[in-house]
Length: 416
Image (cartoon, rainbow, N blue to C red; front, side, top):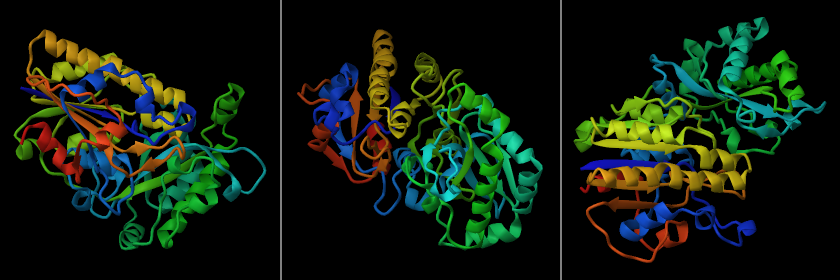
């Protein structure tokens, strides 16, 4: 028996007026997911524990059987693990996005966040910009004084680590430190979302302001504007956290496995739970990614492992970017280029398998942000074929088996 987990990041949504009151899942042409729903167990699940912020960090931890209320210290340490960054006691890791804020002569605080990803900036360009920023003398001096170093992430996502003992110790005990995800505040003035809450917040704010002063007229960004691309003219520090340990997946479930994702968060959770991290060339975390490569990697992993997880970021990214058409396309490609080929190949090879398809959280077209409401899931067993008339969407799932905690999902996939 083989086991698969397919995560369509943020593909669940609320009804959208321009789609005639349907959700993107209801509107999209997804015959493979609908077939799984008809033949499997369809339901809804609460992946975000009550009182915790809705996001892929807490949701995917839950899906992999890790209780965020126990295991979660922040998103950045999970992402750091994906690239082998070792956090020492007292270190704080941050996600350091390269973002776009609007051009103009208005004060920095009044500028709106245009893109949380600098228009899905190319990885090599992003690495060059963040590296140059940390080498520019004024910023290098300020970063060194604050104990900051940066680890380029080959996308808009970078990791910054603060190792200054005095500041990091102060920050660790400052419960009022508040950092917000930029993708939740697209189109809003950034001043109200700058770091706040104590001495370390002031340090982070100074770095943020200084970075904009340097990056706004940086040669890289002058060139990007000339090419009609969004400039990477600001950084955004968020998702702070300290070193974390996660329960061993194989010891907990008795299964070996691998994780296939372009996103450091999902990779890091895999690494910290003892699963193999598989990197697929051409996997971008955007709409145009190497879907076929992910399928090939999963099928190859199943030859030596019991379990393989494929994470597709595109529906979430498209929603954050206000691209409804792209979100629908991402959902349809997840269906036709990930799920359908896997089902076909496993059927051809007469392999018994169980597959779970899930949206980790809702990402709302109406707000371009995350939502912590229950999301649809389906668990399909190739040895069984119950015939129902449901489809894979939020409405039908709400009528199915409800699971109050996402931490129960993995056990159900393995039939326990």
